[in-house]
Image (cartoon, rainbow, N blue to C red; front, side):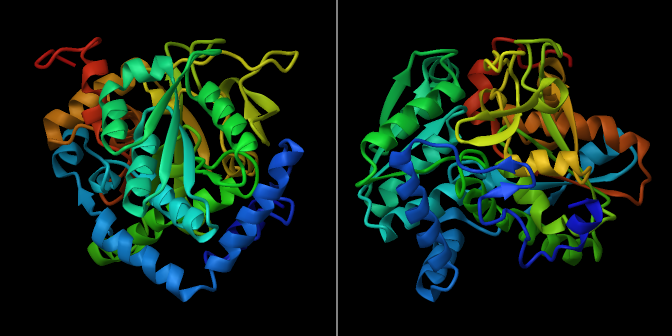
Length: 411
């Protein structure tokens, strides 16, 4: 499939993944035999919900009255004036309940768990926002909840660990490997394999074995659908450019998905550039990765010549992951989405600038996208429009960021 095929795909019904869960040569499902039944059961239950008015009505009701959707599309006038060039809008997912886009997917999957008669949910988390979102949805729906989190990330995200525990979730520290997101996913998959009859794994991003990338994408696609309607109301047209940070890739594909068929809209995904693009010092899969398989799916992976998964680094726990969702890999190969990276320092500078100019402290993940706006906007026309996904708020990051910057310090 070439780029013209992607553009001709309707927003209402995507052609991919195919029946095997593949996006071209990416995706698929590579899991132990014990999990194949669970994945087939999950896909069947999910597809049934598309025809189930009661499920869709319940989900829409929670999205509106509990999550707080639609989230605003905000014109960042002071940042626009400061940068010159394009008009900048933020899609304010930071204003969704729990403070990030993660609740969109967690709520949908917890409702699926109830539908399948699973009384227990588990999840992995890096920055803690998916863990918080899953704990929140589990509390709302009366499900037992256990969250796996790397001990390194627990240290960086103490506030979110406390929030999860306040909502009744058990938070399990993972001390193996790099003690970050990759290792938390490994432990969650082991738990699921051992307890599959009564447990649903709420995978938090558009990665992993099929149907998780598809399910998470579809629950997050509400971001782009709202953005389209809101921008037409505000400006009467499509944006010229859309920007989002990319860890596993759920907030980005959530924003981009409804616009994939609109060739005039440029899309920029921003990975974690860390301290430099060198082994072990970044998490920019499209800059330093290669085709490989990690945690159930084929995609771009940071690995050595023998296929051993490489170390990663990012100031942001949520972007510190060795692979990326297969749909992103597909869009990269077919040049529908451009991918770049922002360094730790660029993200920290953007973190401060956004706070000072707009009174909005972005999550460090989102700050990588702000950094790209800072680079792109000045070279664009004053009539151009950039929409950036403010995927999360920075409350969770202020303690960690304070190790590198001080309030009042010049950027």
